[in-house]
Amino acid sequence: MNALASNITGQLNTASGMDALQSNTAGVANTASGMNALQSNTTGDDNTASGSYALQSNTAGVNNTASGSLALRSSTTSFGNTASGYAALLSNTTGSRNVAVGVEAGDLATTGSDNIYLGAGVEGVAGESKTMYLGRQGTQTKTVIAGIRGSTTGVANAIPVVIDSNGQLGTVSSSVRFKEDIHDMGAASHAVFGLRPVTFRYKAPYRDGTKPLQYGLVAEEVAEVFPDLAVRDAEGRVETVHYETLSVLLLNEVQQQQTEIEKQQAEMRQQRTRIEQQQTEMQQARRVEALERRLDQVLAKSK
Image 1 (cartoon, rainbow, N blue to C red):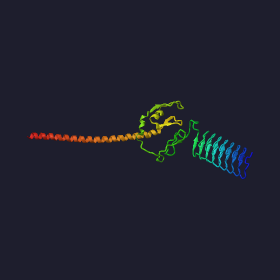
Image 2 (image 1 turned 120 degrees about the horizontal axis):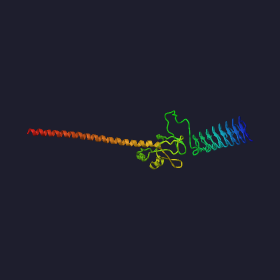
Image 3 (image 1 turned 30 degrees about the vertical axis):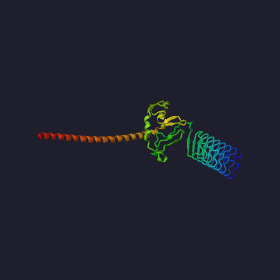
Image 4 (image 1 turned 135 degrees about the vertical axis):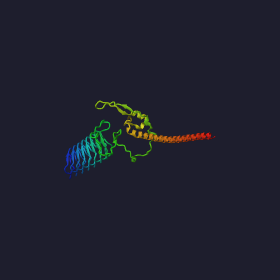
């Protein structure tokens, strides 16, 4: 009923379902399957909507694919979006080139573009762009990706990847372009000497049942001795240690020790020089004393 009811010059369109492509006038090569699918489309081309209310608000957007009820329902003039799953990209209005797979995947995204949402309930954030989500924080508890371990990068500028308590991956930038309030470390590293290195075994065994000996620190002890080195989770609980920071702290201590060693060596050289001078003076004094004795002996014989 009312499928393609307003079509005037549109061609190559397919509409199946109540009010599907109801408002289309000049749009071309659209496919709408389901009640209210692409209902508001007027001039948009090459859109595919499968499911009730899928791409319902689209008017002039092109190259969008929505599969699932309410998928891309709010999209109006966006292009190049792919939404698969109930309510996937539900709130997107003008954002383009987004990909969402899963029930309610990317359903909070609104105007941002070039986002990828993979997983049920991976909702995203309104207005964000160029962001990728794989799985939902708190739902998936393990990630296995092939093709990484044992594979050397193709460019010799690889750096470590880190992760925060929200699950966001990133790298640590060290350029002065990103820093302010820069000072020498001074005595700030001295606290590392209060840390207690330990050996331990993890409670949970590896897949083969083994619990090999490990080396490291206890995060709770670190939090007491050197709080800045302790890492907390999203609930504020102590979880691990900034092991990557230990190297620069130890470097500072090594440099300070080297400075002290060089200072002591300089003092020792000065002392050695003084001792050598004293020895030379003593030798000269002994020679003078010997000459005086011989002179006394000669004078005594001549009398």
